[in-house]
Image 1 (tube, rainbow over the protein chains, first blue to last red):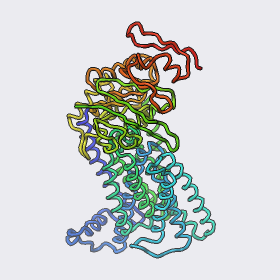
Image 2: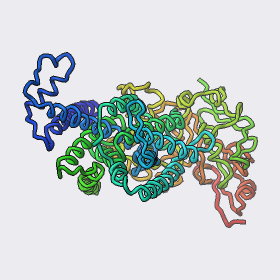
Image 3: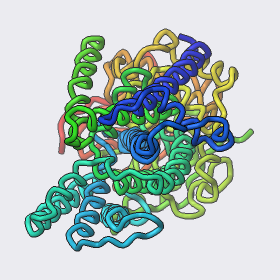
Image 4: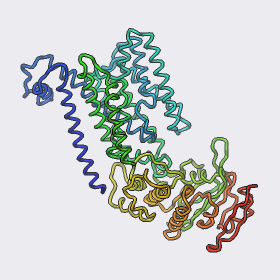
Length: 350
Length: 261
């Protein structure tokens, strides 16, 4: 296939995927325990669009329905979408950067650091708010940043960082963080459920404040990741090769590591530890569209967003009124799909 | 334009261990220069210093008369290409995509590849005779094919200087000869400056125009193969007993190892 045709097909597919994401998000708004009609959902949404709102009346729609759509469902959908996009983009980037198929946002201890920060906040019963964020989220964010700084400094020799040492140090610190979380849980049995829900990820405490905090992190972060996509392609074929092709590899590694850490910390501190998305979604799309990060990254972002919206919708509608942790859904529904894809691609190779 | 690599009093240490001691060498266009020596003699370290993969000291490595430590990686990449020792690519790029990566130093920022870039890639593939593999996955290639593709990537970089680190040591005899012929063709017909690390003394004797023999981080001898690859020199550098004949076809030295000392 010539590059020109390939480019057009890719462009068209991206549009298709954006439409799929919008439809998925819309479907998620209609679904839920409270039965609200399609027309009402549309009227409520349109009413809240600035400039258009005056022309659309929401008379006759109960106040509770408006609250459910605007404060609960819409914020959840947007938050799930943002976190899915962020984690998946980070996974795709880290797999290239470390030339390691097992790389994912949790690899360097970032998630577990956030988990420990959150657990400490819950353990101490902190409930102050900073910039509209709960103490748990703030502690989670700083736990994540502190952890990556420790891991980074362990693996640094002079001005260079070794990917292998980085991964090993990250794994070791992850285990330590998890162990401390479990110890703290035992000492605060009364808050165990709360900690459990947090460490398995959940969008139940979504809100506009979280969305507004997350957006700048993702907008800036994803832009930088996209700008580095070409360099990352070359780095994924070997660091020395990349260097001989004029890429400042150590600088790229530091920038990408910092951006990935911040995106992950922001995502995990607003929604808890959601595994699987960042590991699997990039692999799914690598099998479908190839390893070129300039194409793969946009697909991973859209795919991660769509996947997590679907999973979170399932989490709240499968067994009402019980909320299933979204991390469990991602793994239970994602794994078989991924295994099927692996088997298929293995056949095509043979 | 001059396209030389000049080394003046280059020393290099890994921590306390001095690996290169006051190396002086001169690599000229139109010539294939071989770096030879036993394991640990510093051949690859020297090549990595020239390629600025390792950081050489100031005023020791000159590319076209410019001190390499004063050049940015991008400037270096426009003058000099590297074919690394082993290439292992985990991701499923096509051959064309890999060779296109050779254009990296010439493509600015977010711009796409131009038709000129695609043409250069096509030429590079033809030069090493792998255009038929263009759409194949890099992971499906044999060792010989992969090495040709990596050389094509270096050619796509459009530099006049190419460094190679043991380009043929993993290949069968047919691919060894045909890749060495491609490399010498670049130097003799297109006036490239070629510096290559080699292990095989006979291949070096056949294909190099000049040879630097290293031992313990020092150049013990440099010059045309006939002057460097004498049995006294080889016996003292490699600690072996050997015979050196003349290849009846090429009139180049031919080394027959007998046993280690």
